[in-house]
Length: 351
View 1 (cartoon, rainbow, N blue to C red):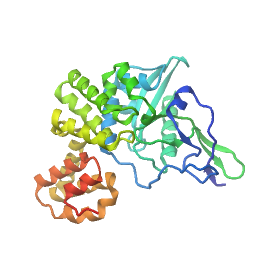
View 2 (view 1 turned 180 degrees about the horizontal axis):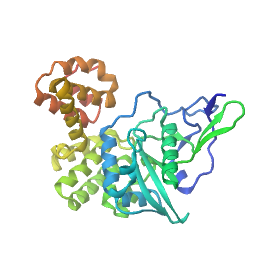
View 3 (view 1 turned 60 degrees about the horizontal axis):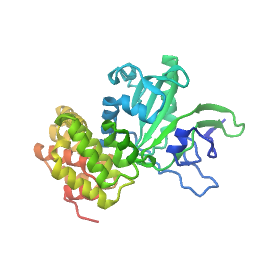
View 4 (view 1 turned 30 degrees about the vertical axis):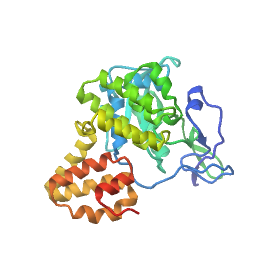
């Protein structure tokens, strides 16, 4: 008997859920409905590490305490962020983003918080994370709270995720989840709260004016040493360049501020994403030649960030043979704010 994700109309949710989401009524896969809203765009591509993903995961690993309190009232992190459950997970079968031991004051119970960071809608996402939650429940015998942080999306299927038999309607899987849409949060409130560790998320929120973001940058710069500030700046910059709430003139102004006042080079210094890709390229280079390994990594970044450029970019990249030039191009592709910038960096003809 075939199973399908249930079409669910919007329902009354908790105050946190309703304040953060504008949803479409669908389950695991957006399907046709009688409503007028279009389902979120889908892609069959496998989930790959992206610059924004890497920056956000570092942030939640570094400042999990403040961020969990901000987004999940009544939830307290147990132990230090470095004590999270990620170290216990078999990554060959379970690829959760961030997992924490927490205490829920309202429920008066220990729980596991599985926080998933999703920058782009993917067809099998809800099915995949429901499997993560089930495996965590089985292994740790605790209630698993599933949270989904979306930096750019404006809509998301209404929870819970349900899989039913097509004719009988019998349920084979049900998973509730909480959605955090950054674009629905007010950047002014986060400034008022005064938790500097959350300021790098502000560009993705509403009311993120240039003056407010400049204020946030100044406070982050005063709060952190160079090496740590560079990582916060990286997250801030990546979100600003892809923000759905900032205007194009606003993005351009913030880019100028970062370049002139805080030096774009800091984004490359101690950048975990760039370092990881460079290391991957060098390891691959041991087997297939350093040059080909670097070329492959550059194409991987382009395929992830600017998929429409892959066909025209590949011949151009294969013409580059100097390791230093390839390394520089890899860094640039990781940080390129948009497709136009990537075209310029690759010296491709404009459309």
